[in-house]
Length: 280
Image (cartoon, rainbow, N blue to C red; front, side, top):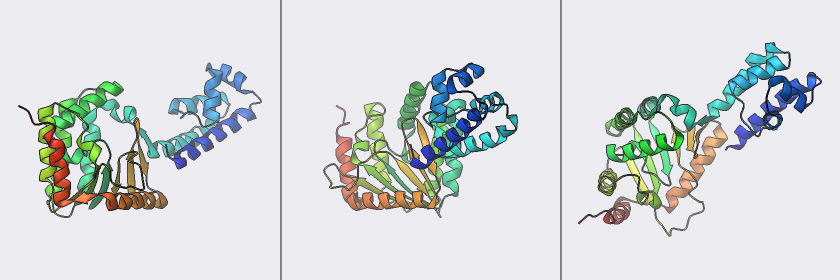
């Protein structure tokens, strides 16, 4: 979770504590007023838990200050702009999320991306994407509109063939070996990845096992037109648009590029990974 996000959550918690203190009630008494557990009041006030909209509405009314509901909602929306849980994003299914990516990538001129454990969505085959989206729905318990999601994800690839776009992609070699679908489909996915080398709109590098790197491949991230960073965690996306955040992630990307190999060397690593899926 980003430092800025945590600071904002703590600031909201401090505001909630202020409202509760003005009532003259201690935490236990305020929790009883709201029919909550005492621990929930403590976690919200200390920035250890993210409030929901229902939480801040209940808090404002419990504090006898319904006039601050809009203020608290604005603070909460500020948090949600930066931190978007996968479960919330996928509540309506995969299709809506993928269609959002279609629009964003169609509008972007330059994307710098890094993935440490997965083939980037914009490069995926239908079979590989189907495996990934199925796994996500199973893990999060979200709607299983898999085929609609796959079709929308495939539409993202149109940007690869349109002038005015460029994808600068770096992949850690480990991502080539993470099996997200049947062996035959993995082989086809790696064939597809190798075929992108040399495409006018794509620069593809692989960070090899054993390369000296001044970083650890912690998580994937995308830099959109040097104005927005979208970073993946296990349960959420972070959307970071502060200039210093964007500059920091670009610096990390540049460091990764120094450790990567390209062209025929990258193709050789893809072919080597592909060999494990040669079927008798």
